[in-house]
Amino acid sequence: MTSRRPFTGCGTALVTPFTANGRVDEAAVRRLARRQVEAGMHFLVPVGTTGEAPTLSPAEKRLVIELVVDEVKGVVPVLAGAGGYNTAEVIEGAHAAADAGATGILSVSPYYSKPTQEGIFQHYASIAANTNLPIMLYNVPGRTGSNIEPATTERLAQVPQIIGIKEASGNVFQMADVRRRVPAEFLVLSGDDTLTLPMMALGGEGVISVAGNEVPADMARMVEACERGDFAAARLIHERLLPLLQANFLESNPGPVKAVMALAGLLEPVYRLPLVAPTSGTLQSLRRIALELGLLAETASA
Image 1 (cartoon, helix red, strand yellow):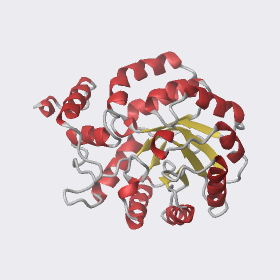
Image 2 (cartoon, one colour; image 1 turned 60 degrees about the horizontal axis):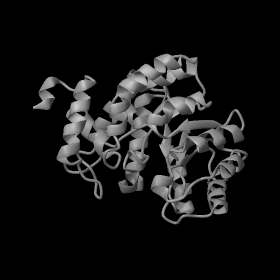
Image 3 (cartoon, rainbow, N blue to C red; image 1 turned 90 degrees about the horizontal axis):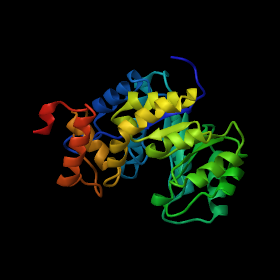
C-alpha cells in the first residue's frame, strides 16, 4: 500500500452491526473492518451517524472503536465519531476515542441547539484545546439544523488540531467557497457520495462515504481516479454506482445501506429505534439495484 496523508482519499462511515437481540455484533464489526482494508479503503470512520452513534452508549462506542482499531492493525487510520451538542460530553468522547486507539475524531456540528457561528467556533475551539487527536469538522445542516458557514470554517482552520472538514451541506457553491478560503493543507472532504467527483474536481481531497460499506473497492477506485486527474475513469464508476448512491437515501441513513448489506449476507437487518427497517417498496428498489450491480446472488431476489 502506498503511503498517503491520513484522512485523504476514501473513508467509509462504517455501519454498526447488531445481533438479533440488539447488542453490538462484535464478530461482524471485525469482519466488516477487515473487508474494508482488503478492498483498499484508505481510512475508516466508526461510530458516526451511519454507525447509529446517537443510539450507542459511551461504552459501546468505545468497544466498536477498539474492535476496528484492533482489526485494522494500523494499516489504515481510524477517524472515530465524537460529536454532539454538549461540548463537555464531546470532549469526554474524544478522550475515550483516544484511549481506544483512534488516530483522529470526526466531530459533527452541535445539533438541535442551533448555536450561532460564534458558538460553533467556541465549541470546536474548546474540543481542540482538550485533545491531542486531529479533529475533522463535520457540517451537515440537514441533520443539525445549522450550517457551519465558510467564514467560520476559515476561522476554525487556523485552530491547532483542526485538520479538515467533512462538507455535507449539499451546496456545491459553499463547498467551492470553503476550498477557496482555507489553507491548501486543510482537508476538504465530501460528505455526500453523489458529490464526491465534483468536490474533488474543485480541489477536495476525498470523501467520507456511506456507499463504501456496500462497494468499498469501487468507491476507493473512483476517488483514486480523481486523485490521478483521470476524471473520465471516475465518471464511469460514478455513473454506474449513481442509482445505489441515490437509493441509499430513499429513507433515513443508515436504513437502506444496512438493508443492502443484510441482503448480501454481511450483517443482520437489525436497527435501533427510532430507526426501523425500510419499507417493502424501498427494499424492492434496493434489491433490484443491488442485483444490477452484482452485489447479491440471484437467489437473493426470491
